[in-house]
Image 1 (tube, helix red, strand yellow):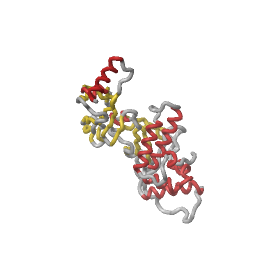
Image 2 (cartoon, helix red, strand yellow; image 1 turned 180 degrees about the vertical axis):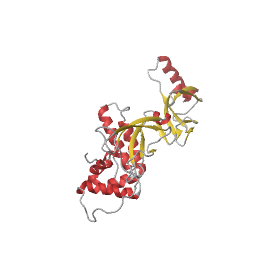
Image 3 (cartoon, one colour; image 1 turned 90 degrees about the vertical axis):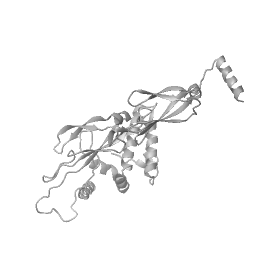
Image 4 (tube, one colour; image 1 turned 135 degrees about the horizontal axis):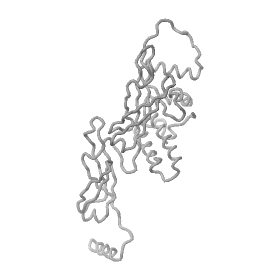
Length: 306
C-alpha cells in the first residue's frame, strides 16, 4: 500500500470541518460516480473508490485522529489492521472496541515497526484471562434504490485458522451513509474462552443521478413544459419504487416552485413503515424550433403584455 493524502483527494484543508468534508465528498462522488460520468469508466470507478476511502477515514473522528497521528506510516498501519483475506477479496476494516482492546491495537501497531522487540517486562506469568475478541468494521456500498427497498450482501470471510466461510447479511431499508449494521459474534475470536467480537458493516450510499437525499427526504428537479406552467396541467413524477405519481400544476406556476409529496421519500431506519417526503422543484422547458405560427403567437403575447 502507498500513502494517500486523503485531504488532498477530497480537496480540503487539514482543518476542514465535518460539514466541509461532507460537501466536498458529495461534490466529488457525484462527479466521478461510474453511472454518471461520460468519460473513462474504469478511471472514474478507481477515482470514486479513492474518494470513498478518503471520506470513510476522515468522516470518523477516531480514524481521522489516528490518520493525522501516524502520518506517512498510515499504509503500514492500515494494512496491519486489515484481516489477511484472499487477494482481491473482502477485507476486514479497522478495529474498534474497548480501551483494553485499543491497548492491543497499539501493541500490534508498534510490533509492525519494531519487529516485536521486547521493551522490558518480558512475558507475564499466571493464568490467561478470558478476553472478548476484536470488533471489526467492513465497508459496504449500496445504491439509493437498495437503501430504499433494503437488500442483502454475501461476504466472504476468512477465519483465524485460514478457513473461508460465506456470511449473508441483510441491509435494512432506510440506511444512510455512515449507518452501522452490527453482526453479533462475527468479529475476531475470543482469547482463553472469551466471546467473539462483532462485525460492523459501515454503509455508504452512492450518490444518485436524479435524486438528492437529505435525511429521509428526497429532492428532485422536474423538467416541465413552459405551457404547462403557464396554463396549468398534470405531470408525471418518477419515484424510487419505479412507479410514477401524478402532480397537478396550477396555472401561472413560477419556475423553480417546490411541491411536497408527503410520505414519498425514504423509509425511516427506525421504522420502515414511516417515510420522509419527496420535494419536486419544477424547471421550465423552453420551446425550441418554433414554427411561424408559434412565433406569431409569442409576438402577440409580447405585444399584449407590453
